[in-house]
Image 1 (cartoon, helix red, strand yellow):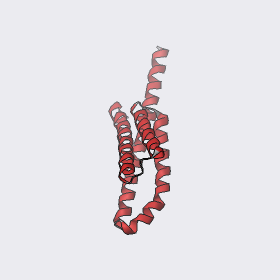
Image 2 (spheres, one colour; image 1 turned 30 degrees about the vertical axis):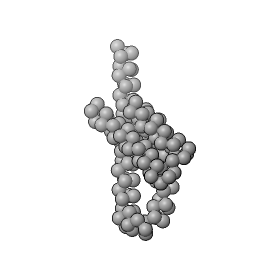
Image 3 (cartoon, rainbow, N blue to C red; image 1 turned 45 degrees about the horizontal axis):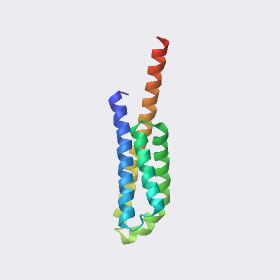
Image 4 (cartoon, rainbow, N blue to C red; image 1 turned 180 degrees about the vertical axis):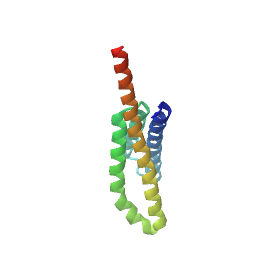
Length: 129
């Protein structure tokens, strides 16, 4: 895998995490739910996005796990909102956004692990020379 592809994978992750951060903030302010827990989640997403930008494997894995857990939790809410918010098209948008974001976060995990493996190999090569 080339350096450019690894960087693109990582960029997918931090951009998606940034969009999730902004989206969470917009939904919280629009619904009147800008309270302490929503602010903490927004700041956590911002911190994780920055961690992915800095090529942190832990941040990439954390975002993948957190997003998956949130989607599992929000599935019931989406099911209950679907009849009043567009029915099948509402659930389709839920699944499309889930696939897009999960793919971006999975690419971030792959990219950060590849980046770190490449950096470790470079350090080992320079130490053996």
